[in-house]
Image (cartoon, rainbow, N blue to C red; front, top):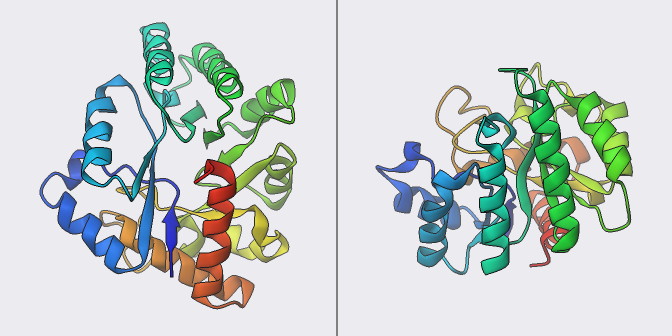
Length: 255
């Protein structure tokens, strides 16, 4: 059984004390494919080190996270393009709009999101979208940029059924993580109405740990807990969920 964690920040300082042990724990649990989103230029070297240490398991993205869009965002976008010119990545991510913490840089976030969507098209890569309190703003840009070569993942999807269908209409799969196990998460109430071909699994570790680990540090081995919940929702076995969602990840990332 191969389970894919399509979104995990394995370079986070929260793993500095036990990173190798934590990764091996995930692999032993069947979670053996890790897709690593970028945040900004400060995490690039740590990502490369992860890839060097786990070349069969770690697959990197490149991008500028919306909450890291600050006054220097043009320099950060240039870093993204410079790295894309140097080597292979599997997605542009995580990118998008976040209006939960701060609305100060909304315009810059919109520019950064649009710019990186166009980079994805240029390099024929999927995008991995971060959306928090910003579905309308995200959808507006996706509507403007939609095309046959725009595709990817709506990471940490927490929207409504209607929003899920709209995201899928833009060639996006839904990244399902720990929120699906929360009593107030709500997505479990309609997820079985979404064809499994549109679903991938993720943790977003070290954030958003699923029940029974909620409130603690998340880690990639807990993708199994997400798979268990999704299996219950779809009335399928965990190996079936693992196979289908891993195949979906392969269709998106090309590996």
